[in-house]
Image (cartoon, rainbow, N blue to C red; front, side, top):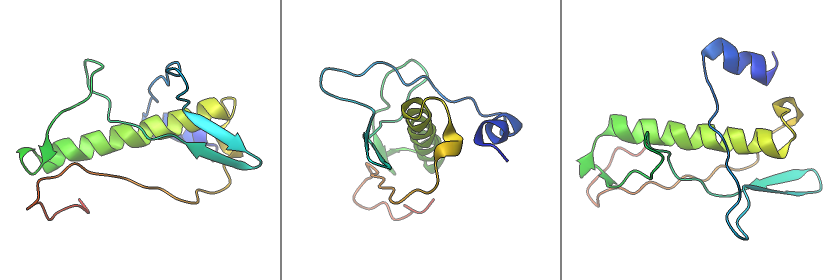
Length: 109
């Protein structure tokens, strides 16, 4: 199934990518590889959520933020590939960082 059709079937709308800031770019293509820049979780008001997972931020909130980052990354891929996610053949590496309290031990969730 085509990526766009699957997103529609799941009721997922990708967020806007936005313009690059200065020398920052969302993606850089080198040969057949596409490198994505790091993303922060979007907030409802357009800001960046603050806090630490396990210290004032629940696992559910952290999950929502992580999902938002994932959707931003997919949107950046789509934008860099001219709107065609079907051009993605494979994903080589994903690195995620979580701002968590020192005693937080439930990162897989």
